[in-house]
Amino acid sequence: MTNRLVLSGTVCRTPLRKVSPSGIPHCQFVLEHRSVQEEAGFHRQAWCQMPVIVSGHENQAITHSITVGSRITVQGFISCHKAKNG
Image (cartoon, rainbow, N blue to C red; front, side):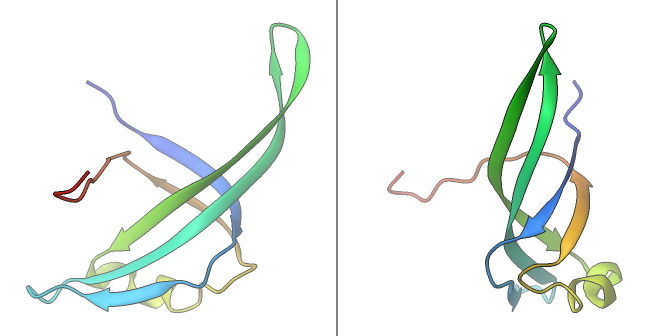
């Protein structure tokens, strides 16, 4: 099965940087995407806000430069996490 996403946009919430108990750094933020896409021969406004988590020591140098207003492209996989209470 394929699970791959590439999305560009603007960081719209202040990045939250944390280190897990196992020592892995994580950077969490929300990416806002706005574009015009073609669907069934018509132009359509596309908009979404996607929560993003960038993890790992190899990404720390990149994530430290991310601020609100940064225009970036992310790529990775989609996963849904729910708390015990739903």
